[in-house]
Image 1 (tube, helix red, strand yellow):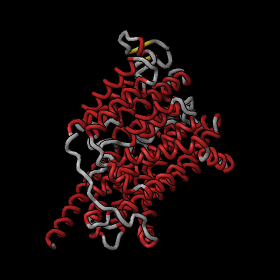
Image 2: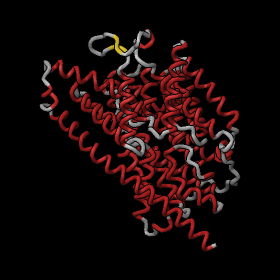
Image 3: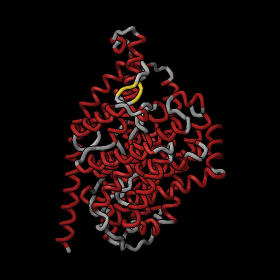
Image 4: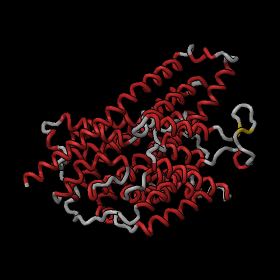
Length: 513
């Protein structure tokens, strides 16, 4: 169970000195990153990981948590004001957020989005604090076969639930597995796939690869649209929601919070799926579903609450099992490793105080972006108008500086550039990037534990069928793969139907006018 004494001390640590400053700055810049279309939460974290090297572990992690939660929320600002999601997760917010802005209720929409994101994020962060120690304690019973099964489960979900095409997700995941094989053999210690380059002996540098895939690739893509960014002209007023507004959104919160938590725990599904499911369920349960898509506050509340409610669920398997829930938590996992904190059940034994500080940081990060979001709403709205001709070169320079700062070697710059090009090509042809990163992490875990399992059984593969937990997880992985493909098709159909409903509602409004 959670140690309340350590959690209270964690709150004290996060709220003191540089830690609190880092949290506020992380949340502030996270909202800015989320509000600018094209700059995702994953990109923001990957870009700023190198700048945390000189900080204490908890200061750096708290700042990255602020960026993570703030960016997920910030994507809704652009959705409401310019009908362009700041992050992929904010797509569902467009359906009712933009119509509200068209009615002159942009301030009210942003206020509801802020409160709703805070409700979902705080709920799931509290669940993380209470459930993570239980799961970590259970995971201490795991051995190599169980970890192999867990990695297989995560890999199966990663490949099938990323992107619109399972085939493209599979190809992306396979590329990640190939990258994971570069370096030293985990059992024999001999080099493989290094092609004579001594720099590859330790494998592909993780952080420069992430910066290339998620940040530099986006720089390349943004160059194509650098002169076409829409501008904001909305006037924001009545930003702080009334008590009546919050009460009307309460049913949406009660549905979106558990949906977000469950979706977040499942590896690789992501906040976008959580937002769509929450929106669809709220619309289904409404007494007036025909109003959704015309600018109802409940639609904004469901979408924003659902996407932020997935954040704690995404962090849960990462911190307890060492399996990241999505691409953003994969980068967070890399940041923890860089600070000599290996995610997994042993982290709870070796550094319980750090774990509880992370819990406190996650809760406070959600509270912080709510306060900043309400007080600086007008400023964040105008951030969307930043001239891309200056912003994109600045991000490009930060990418190169961040990649070089890892080890101060030219090899990391080359790694960043190569994967930046690879990421750009993948985005260009609609291949999901997240499965590649997650497969690289899970692939190494899967291979090493598979071979350790065979050593334990002296080469007998039946070890995977004689351990109950392993069998259950492997069966669950196979079942999830089949169900995931079916649900993916249903989700695409649901998304198309929602878009059609919104278009029909807009047509009715035009006809009435």
